[in-house]
Image 1 (cartoon, helix red, strand yellow):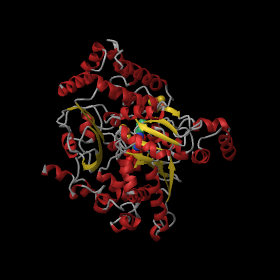
Image 2: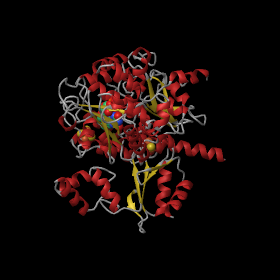
Image 3: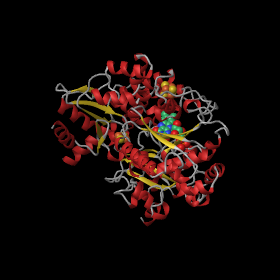
Image 4: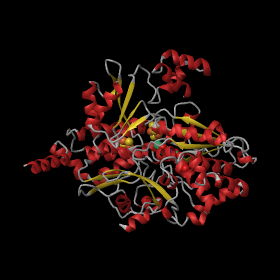
Length: 133
Length: 448
Ligand SMILES: Cc1cc2nc3c(=O)[nH]c(=O)nc-3n(C[C@H](O)[C@H](O)[C@H](O)COP(=O)(O)O)c2cc1C
Ligand code: SF4
Ligand code: FES
């Protein structure tokens, strides 16, 4: 798993070549590496945008208006929220399960790291602008 | 209101004390040591045998804070006496919807967790500990890694800790996004580098865990209690909480409350008091339902319930991870049920058919109901689907799924359908959500 993380950090996503490389290092077949890589949601097996925006759609976030935020992001970026990437390759938009930040609901995470709290349609738009530059 | 402030007063809280007092730098080694960190570890190394430590924790009555509430000292005593190596594995994979206490602890007081880890390792005689930290925790990972590095440089982690012959090294493993890895046997598979899917039990991890060696898995909040128990004793610890649930607990309160957040209060505090501590329900609304222990827990409506392991079990639900999601009267329960079930369906690891297929069907029926295309028989169908996953009456605790995830999906959904039968029916009869319809009508009235 640390190697998969490294590969994704290096290439932006987990490529077939990277999985073959990892297999060589660990003495596993590429199929065995793929079996692990495909199990976890944070490994991307196809190219992703420069930034991944993961919006929580679980209980607390929904109570506080997550769907409005997701809809607004879909409209702003022109993609669906099922992991689609914008045509310019800038953003991938996905839905996340509870991010363990329900006191910040509705919240989202950028690149599986920075958490953004209490989002509104206005504040996500500002965030997208900021990330674009 | 003075009664409420008593619940969270200095005297009544200790887990969150360091970061409540020093929010700016509670996570640094300097601040941690200046506020007593690692003194309990030194005391334990100098004055206690491993067996005495196990007995102390047994006497304290500390129960696991990861969800199952298993007595920590008893769990430790299951490790066979002379099988080495043995491991301590730390569960920092917090993923139960509604729960956000472990992330806060990790980010704000990693040294409390680390000291707890070392005390537990001393008790079970483990020379290695692995922290499994959720993949999405960026800041928490960096803080924890820094804490381990700083403690190692200060001679508090690694060989000959604090100049004694106790040695324990600590390693961090980052997850990569899978709720099921919070379940302890899946977590071990994931730690070994595989897909994180549950293992058959027995053998239990205490006998055959990581790399088939005896392994204790403990939650980070559980471990953060240990320095305090060592410092002040089991009788002191039992002055908090109830007979069967001693101590305080971090409750993560979210949803329709004025001040969502983590609150440390004594176990046994009532649900109503807890909601008041979090500022109550805003906007003059009334309460509809509460999830008392994370998405896996059946819902309740009675705010007089004491928040202890035993009282919630007696009420047919569970304390779980201590995640309290509050829903006011504007909430559509069918929608919440759909979200809950969608979660379990998404996170079902696919290993066994009842869970993989069962949660998929439940989700389909709920989506249909929510979009106004439900059928009159759907409520009964949902209950049947739940029963298909749950144990038969009188059968031992676990149901027809391989691990508790399947049970949780059915258990929580069944409670929702049973508490709010009319609302499921109304969705069918009106072909839309009655709650939202009512809301819209009210908004129009206000405008007119
Ligand atoms: C589906 C599932 C998910 C779980 N997720 C977590 C989790 O995120 N964190 C945690 O500490 N325990 C979780 N648990 C409980 C663990 O299996 C285990 O009981 C716990 O880590 C033991 O630590 P404790 O005794 O200190 O509570 C989960 C259990 C199940 C069945
Ligand atoms: S109950 Fe669900 S999560 Fe558990 S083993 Fe079966 S499929 Fe996997
Ligand atoms: S429900 Fe969104 S962070 Fe927990």
